[in-house]
Length: 356
View: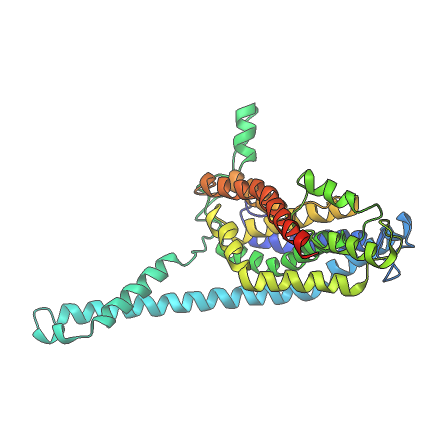
């Protein structure tokens, strides 16, 4: 609907309100329906949730159409003008340097010129060659022909790997990734911290762990242990204290700040090639999966959901495909996590027996 069109940028602007309506309406349903008792959001019925979600989504779509879209047009054009201006400066610098070399050919003073000048020009020209080139609709067609056969339908459905995306359209999606990243962060936080509140006993936590649902939801055991210590009961009849939720949020943020860059580099750079458009789809798909799982009461691994989105997009559309060696290492780490955590916990318990 966007990337294959003759003028993908305008199609992207046209569908922008639809994206915002879907994101905000979906988030509203997840927050309002069977929502938090602490925030007083547990009394919404299905009908009222649908009405409020549609209203919130419509407001978000209207704001994106009348406020965000005009600003986004100016921002994309300004960035394009800046890149074109830098490209012109690079080309002129290279041309001037080439003319100096030709005029002083054979002159000994040329050998006294700093080597940094030639290396700087070389860097500039190499960087300019890597800048995205926007091709007009008359120069390049992104249309894929449809043939009435299974192989023809498959070739039409899967994006062409040699297709050159429009640079302005990718720049527009790069700005949209800010909003989808917030959506993804909200969805991942909802799943990672949400399951601190368990309506059953503590053994349900370990039941989820045994079937490999999520290594991220470590707040649930803490809450269950706290409930046993304070109420002398394995059943949680009261909501999770807010300070436990804030403790989980702070721990996630600190872990992301200290070591998160390594995981981001592995998933974002080494698994497959990702551009702003595919990054938008990856974040939206992973966030939607995590939010649906949260509402169904499934403590899934948000990391699994994100890696699955990256691999899925890499299989469908990527110039280099998926690096299956990196994905194999990631999958092996998932399997190693369960026995490794079990061994560490058993060792700590073994030493605590002597201390007690």
